[in-house]
Amino acid sequence: MVEAFACDLDGTLLGRDGVLRPRTRAAIARARDAGVPVLVATGRMFRSVAPYLEEVSIDEPVVCYQGAAVVDPPSGEFLLHEPLDLDVAREAIAALDELGFSPNVYVDDQLYVARETEYSRAYSAFQHLPVTEVGDLLAWLDRPPTKLVQVADPELIAEIRPGLEQRFDGRMFITTSLPYMLELGNPSVTKGSGIAFAATQLGIHLDRVVAFGDGENDVELLEVAGTGVAIETGHPRLLAIADATCPGPDGEGVASVIEAVLDSLA
Image (tube, rainbow, N blue to C red; front, side, top):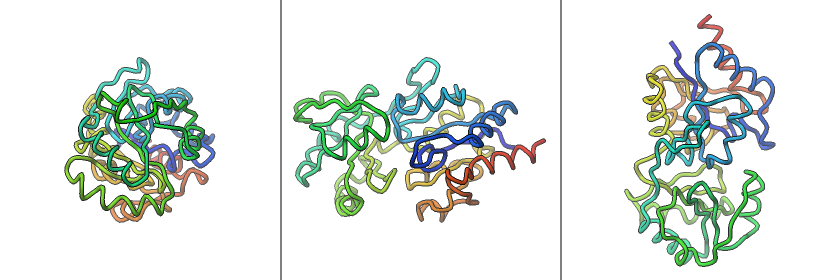
């Protein structure tokens, strides 16, 4: 008795080329035709994920920003928004600055940086987003940001993460979406809490949701779902809790699972 599928985007539905493949698009359409919605849960901004939702006609609430926002695609209305506390965000920006880093800052579904770098340019190109330079982030930031993201080489991310986790224990949710992206958000939200909110909005039982993911930031998503499927090359923490695995986007593994589930319901 499957009532919905819940899917991460990058690394799960999308490969490095950022393209939804034909079999994947067809499987999503088939699920929707069968009355089984496909819910997207991503770390991306809404404006970044919106074109993909439109491409496959998904209009159910989408979980964005690692669960800090749940958005109604047709209207763009934020049904849920749990930003990072302003004082905590400012402290985190200062702490990163002491370490020689400067994060991406997200406010009002816009991306801001102190200054453009090779990392911000690569990030904006990857997600097809404009980036706004604001100079001194602490002087500029006067509202709670939806989240912060530090983009850097994976080795550097691994080096600075333990200290940040110790300093902000209980005050921030810290995870990685990709090895070079350290995500800093409100401690009360995850993709799991976001999909739980969306399920409540739609009258869906979480124990009848099949969830898919590949990253560390998908752990909570798979934990709240009735069935959790990890991409077979996924993060070790995710593989440890998954009920099953499937191939990645190049092999359209999510599509194969959706097809098998729908076949079993027919």
